[in-house]
Image (cartoon, rainbow over all chains, first blue to last red; front, side, top):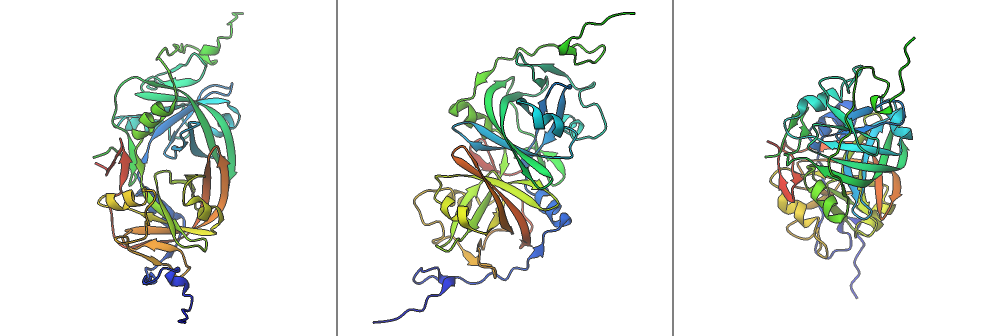
Length: 183
Length: 183
């Protein structure tokens, strides 16, 4: 009988030798974090809502799909953000997609201390009451289902209720500190 | 004294008339959901871990940054996914970034029923034990902090512990059913 010592680096796979990785690792401080995520391209949307005190809206690069059935998406928002009080209590919201040419709109809804809904922003209300950007090429209406507190932020999960498309568009992306589109 | 009737569509803003939006809205079924998110471009990573039963890994387009301080990210994974049992119990994991040329690697880690770590995959173990892809241009090591059950999926929140960069890269994106890069 032959005896084989257990080698955790081999993971129980005969014949497989796993070489340790000696790539140098840095601690993830704020500068490293920014540098890494600047290079992780992300789609850009503007999320709008009204919890009864007027419209709020903010540019988000954290929108992702979570589940197909039911249709769920998530995004995150700093608890200190000006839009958080409305998002913390609204039952529904609108996800406004932006097209590749709408850098100005994305920038306006990422700027603090201005009235983001003033001119030149064009907006309306859906029949269900939520504010929507008139220039968004398509939008989703969603019901908020969960708000998870994570550090100084919340991850919000919303169930998609409706979708409207006004025109075809190329997506606006944020990558390397700039708004770009796909090649 | 003049009396102004409160008009909720005006939101208390004098002079602002908000026109209702009559864009036709569709219910979000699976086909609409797929169609919308196919057009929402997303960065592509491969997440790897080992909870003690061998390496697991899967391609994710749901990685987003949640918080800068502390450095937190989130991603979602179907509870039915083959990697979920390991991700449900692992303390740490590796986020492998992919570059624009690595469509094959992304495809392999999105394919069911194969050994994703077999040739031609090249992988190693970090000094801390986690599996890592040798061909990833950069990677993050992270500690799992939260697992939120959402429908048939989990949103996983992890705190970034280390980052290593092997070479500069252009990001791999998933958009409109295809792997692409930025323009």
